[in-house]
Image (cartoon, rainbow, N blue to C red; front, side, top):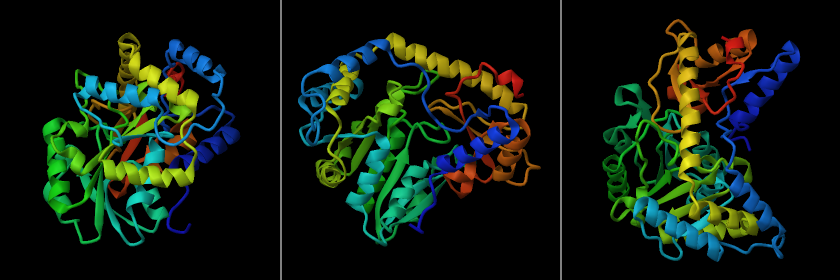
Length: 374
């Protein structure tokens, strides 16, 4: 328990609550990346039908039911041209569930796992939970917040078991094409480690970019898995729905771990996931992306008025912004902004030491009253 702190967003929520109580004013919270675009009513109506079906409240069993399996396999074929065989996929209780299960499946005490800095805190906490050692590799502005293979190679040791990568990226919004992903597959194969690909934002992209799957790389299944999430794709964040796909041995290990931790994804949720994947609504998706892009474009002007500098992200739901040179630190900047203006940003140090001069702002928030704060 002493190896890790409370999750960063639990800490920030307490700060926001305290400020709202002391000032009597609602905080404009750019913190959580909580997709707020309304789900398609058709999906919610179907979910209600699935809940009312006979047997829906029973234990679902382990692994994917036939509807979920069929829909996921067909979606991978349509979306990526990737064939998934039996045993190469498993449903998750949200993408974050997969991070913990993979840590338990892969890591022993003292093992090392490579994690991006800045990167999603969920890559670090589960490793610490089992006594493993996260080893950070740098994502720096001079490399457009992309990894330098030569720098990562220096971090490899006999204890290295795996590497996490994440595109479109949380927190930077950076993207990667298939050629760039292939360098990671080659890197993992060369060093005899697992490649863990967080692809939660695969369908949250802008300006014409279409995100790929790591499994499109020939031979990727030999060394790689990827995590997918319904949270962002369908605005199902609170339903806790996701999947893992790729190397069969690793999927088997994750399934073994999860058989001890939970009793599987509920039948109604598996049917909902299957229905959503099989009835993907392009019009709804385009409207969702437009909503996020429109809000992004309004928010960036407000953030620039605070002296923040950044590039527009082509993926995910965040702006990764550098604080003014005269500021002491990201934490100090965020604390003063919260106290003086009741605006909450996430200090970049929540995502690693390289975030000391950065903040993250989510643009999946209601901005109807944004003018009252800037």
